[in-house]
Amino acid sequence: MDTDDTQDPITLYHGTKANLQTGDLIQPGFNSNYGQQKKAAYVYLTATMDAATWGAELALGEGRGRIYVVEPTGPYEDDPNLTDKKFPGNPTKSYRTKSPLRVVGEITEWTGHPSEQLQAMKDNLERLKQLGIEAIED
Image (tube, rainbow, N blue to C red; front, side, top):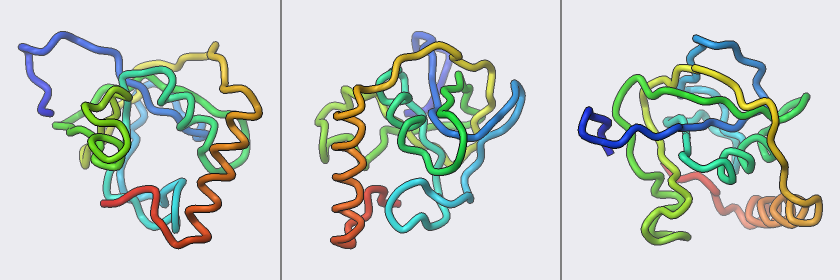
């Protein structure tokens, strides 16, 4: 999906554990939080708080999860890791880009998933890792 002036403006989010400031850029090329944690060719973003919450909760690293409001600096596309593989039609409104995302704000008050649901997701990701199945495909 290329961004242009004919689209309705939407708020886009990025969930992480990184401590970022307004104006910082989130760029591809860092180790992924998922699978074999190889260098990520894309940066992921979403238009739903639920998907951003998963990103914040499942991100590797120390500290609390954070959800940033981001602005793409270039075109973005549907995330093929979710769209039409797991959730036809992209109801999670998940996207990816090879361009940096600019942090324009932070959502400081958000509710995480119930602990049982979060643990089930972590267990599933670990199971996939043990099977050698990548959660993210470039």
